[in-house]
Image 1 (cartoon, rainbow, N blue to C red):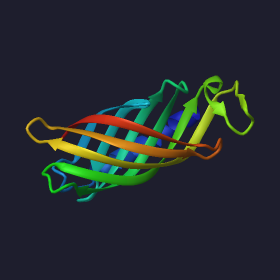
Image 2: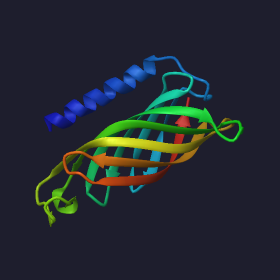
Image 3: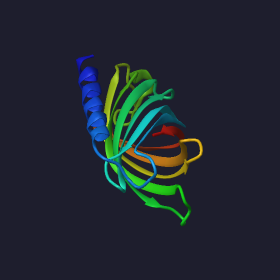
Length: 165
């Protein structure tokens, strides 16, 4: 439990630090919303430069019965010369807490009965559209990740909707 509190404190610090920075050319500075995919949850994105943002994701995985916190650094660029449409890519990391009986242990070829903590590296590649008339963004992304202690590579695709300001 103490580890979870420390992790949430670090995530809160990162978000507050990002909010203190000045924003960007994407048309908005901060977006808060929902991410729906294999791992669904809340997402917060804040621009720290004209073309760079920090995104925090708090997600729940029903497949592995767990929760993960992900922080990503993302670079943005205009896509297809369309106003409001941007593509982005980035790197970051995650920490997740899962029920072991639902999380497959590939190294020992058996189901683990204990709780599992997964730490790893994440990437992201996505496309986002900013709807200026109603301050929302909609987007889609693919987020590959690798869990370091337990090994294994995975990927998650998702759609997201954010209210922006």
